Picture (tube, one colour):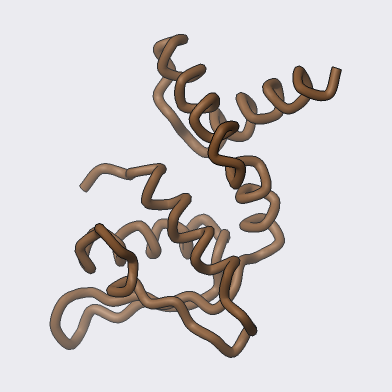
Length: 118
């Protein structure tokens, strides 16, 4: 399965919007995305240390949950939260022929934000 940065961004936004740390966001609850794809991307976010939660595979299809972002998760989401900036990050990488990665997103965001501040 390929990594989809738009799905990753949606998950991070949903987890950030949880009302308390005792709340959970479940992979099956991500609109317009099947539960298996959502669980896969949540597992990637767990592995990257951007969210706190867990996954299970034993009973039926994979399912994941998250109850908060980590510090790094907040830092990363702050770079991609704004829809206009997110679209510019993707367009900039595409125009340069660069595939999106965690590092590329952070670096392009840094350049675009710095340019906006000048």
